[in-house]
Image: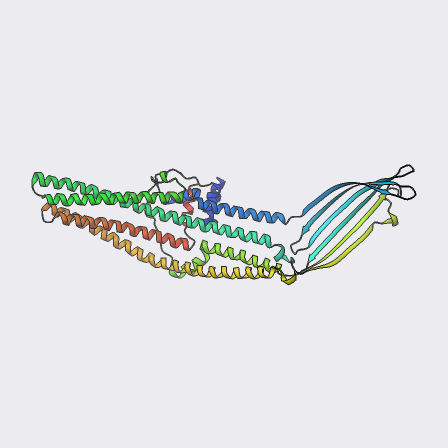
Length: 504
């Protein structure tokens, strides 16, 4: 159960938990159709929603790009082996030919430091021998062996110098990975919001079907009672029968429309859950409206949006990536001025002229080469325009970020106001539905006593149905507005973190 404990650690944010559970498969939810709660719908979306899967894979790919750039910073080993055979013709006192053979090997290690210093440390070794032939007998030349060790250093002073230039690919990959992770969290939160909105719309559609079904049952009974009283008892007229029959037909039509709407809402929820439309038609939202708790005070909402909004976090990560591109472009918009130096030491020994490893002069041969290299494109090249474009794109991204901050903070504060109104509407609609039900019951009793008409009863029952539907719509509006506020402030998935952990 190690994965379970890892999944429910409080250190994980809700978005990270949802993405981690869905990516690693820790969550196990029933993927069938039928009745489900809102929590189960969110869990299924974590496992099956294609958009969320794509965001998780994008984040994984971005992390793999970081690993690739980290691997590119490691030293490189270069090794080679060569062989050569050459013949040359010559004239003179003894015309003939000379052939030579050689075999060589080289091993070197290359590395670039964080400040741009390019280092290469290596060694070479080779053996050469040959034969001269002419009128006289061929004269073989014994093998000669050489070995050389060398160190090459190149230090950029302008373009390519410093950690900003050298580590730019790694920083870009890291910024892109962070942006992809923030996008994944934003997608997870948006997916949860979409699922919850679709779920509660399906819940309302289910409730509408139930209201109309209950009303049709009552209306059909009223039709039968009216026929009995009109044909057998004589306490009702055919007008009453027609009144109730017309009402029942109208309710049946409303029920048919409610069922069609319910199927459409189920298919939409199924799409978000990755369920085939044929199977999704049987989805049923059976959950009860959740306990929403206290609404955050208006003074803290703006700061919560700035600190925790997954969308703003993704935009900030994209700004970091844009700033890195500006740094790279500005570095490229410089002349190249490099210092370089190579130092090497070589040895020589031959079977014929020198015994063993004895060297001429008693020491190896040394050489040092150093210099300065300068490069400047005529007319400046494309680098100035690239740097200007990168800076302009950064400014545009910053402007879009500020615009989105203003939009999200305004939206969150508007939702805060709407929630207050929604709570009041729920209370008023509940009281209205209760009064309408009492009125319909009273009108029915009066009809039995003969003190009212069937038209008044039908009207009262229609008012009751409309009041019940308005009450349920008010509940859905309150719930979805609260979820939208939590999404804007980055708190939506925290609501389901415990549920997701219990599913593991």
